[in-house]
Length: 120
Image (cartoon, rainbow, N blue to C red; front, side, top):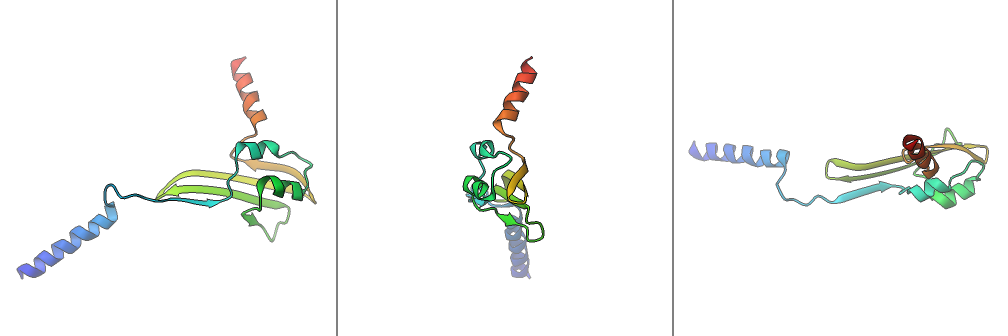
């Protein structure tokens, strides 16, 4: 009876360690998707061709087969269960020409305009 009780307690304690995690354990960083930098976003201009956009940004992570005029670039960096960085960039085309884009990283021109507005 005593041996069974010790086995049960040991099992409960060890299963609790998996839930909480062992302290000091290294968790590897995981990068997924396309890295999109501020310099890349600054190079995007309406009127660029698909080929020019692909040259600047690389091959998109997702090319929607139902909407050929939209490319999605997403980058996620996480360590363990913690998501450290999540960048998204969506590029829209009108035919073969870039019409506009939506990004979590604004172009530098928008950032400088915001700083000038705040300083005035």
